[in-house]
Length: 316
Image (cartoon, rainbow, N blue to C red; front, top):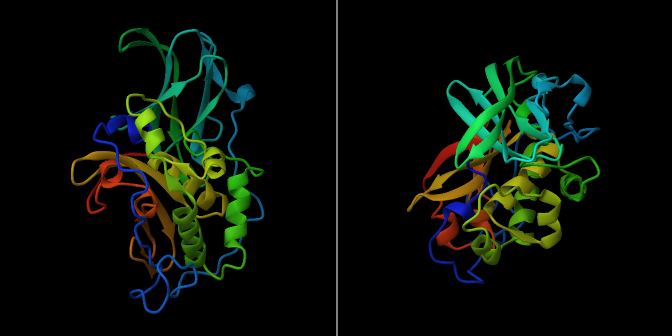
């Protein structure tokens, strides 16, 4: 299961202090605005109305079912997520399966629950808690099925989950609200968040090297915000937390980028309206890719590719 870019990038380490790629957030070319300027150009889309509350996600132990120390909560499937917890000394995986596609999440054995998105949409899911026996061999501890009917197709991408964890009191939510203050339309919000992320979060090549031979990395949006740096998965997680907390659907996507099939993470956002930048194009009524890492300071092509071709693998 893909859980970040660094474990899959065993190429040479990008040089520290790589030049920051210019970002010109405008509608038609750069005009007279400075590259990366939040006030350059125009935006469009419906009027932005800040949500009065932040959508949350929680594990309901009272509603969960299971066996052998494992519990699965399917009481929030309409909101686009499921939860799992377990008490077990072995390595555990939580599987979310639909139509032959399997998402495998590391599950703590100390009873700490995890929240996972139902990113494959409506339909029949199989949910399983698996216990490692040896090597890559697992046996099922407990499982259940769920016939999912989402309240809207955007629900999985409007709530926090394992790789995009936040609450109403999170620092990243507060920062997002500050950035969205005064926004006239959704394009204003997207531009403000994108511009802030690419200017204030630097790519951490040291962290990428440290995680190069590990798997199961889980990003923390507030930790990335505090550090002011991160790897591609950190960027995507922080961006998703900000956009979702502001009521704008945002996916975290992991997959491959050209030219050498480097494993990478980026975002897809959905807004009504159109605006164009040097790095991203947001189209009306369709998912649109934004790659904040690609425009950030310190990120070399050895870690993020050349930004020309993307191949999706997992969506969170």
